[in-house]
Length: 186
Image (cartoon, rainbow, N blue to C red; front, side):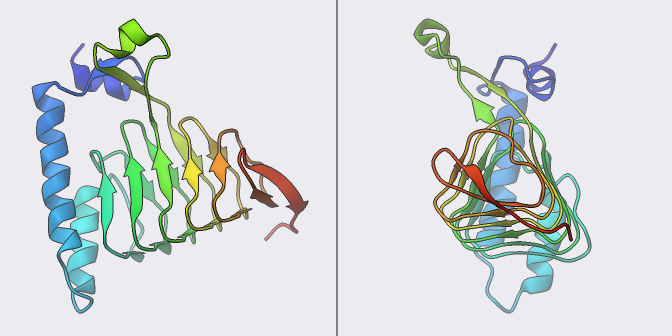
């Protein structure tokens, strides 16, 4: 298997591989172009994001700056909005539903590193997918860790660290993030 095939399969892989370095460089080029646009270039921004991401709805907005690893593992639904300083580390798929809002400085991480120091020092890593349902609002400075699923119609409070799955129709907050209030289904 190639390192990219290992990455996409969720196995330990080396991001130092030439193919993955080329993929990352392509994503860096597109995000650099995106991050250097002006507020009057909204159509061009959308074009760049559609080139970068694995799939999008017709209407999406991200406020620069934005950063990601590869881009092609990011799939966002219709009406997606991310405010300033969003980071999505997408060594594994990130699926975000329709009508989702990310406040400033939301970070979504799919990448993990081995706990064993000797293995970790070799530079290998792995990915676990993140899934976010429809109609989700994620507050500022929130971190979403690898392997997490967030249900539909969820509000995540600012500053939360989401380490475990969050069910649909709740407000969840804290470190670690936990549901504190039920919401009516949309």
